[in-house]
Image: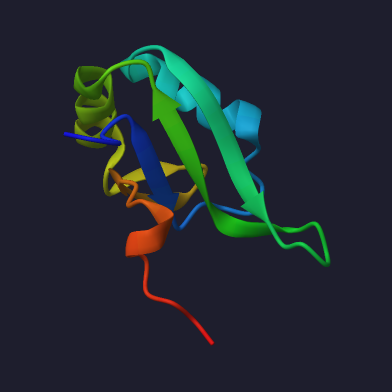
Length: 91
């Protein structure tokens, strides 16, 4: 499973930081990176982010632990991130 270690995290509360995300997902295993995506112009969080786990197994554990669970008052969605070229292009 290629790219199975990188996870897309959606519906994040705007108050969540990259550190919060890393701490939450560390419960499922070793987090190699965690980032909240921000708007280029305003710098505000866009409500989603990415977490990369050390192994595919840890990524699967993180999905099982966090998908459709509550983080800081919002139900988040966790899936394996798709490579950028698979995403539909917006014009």
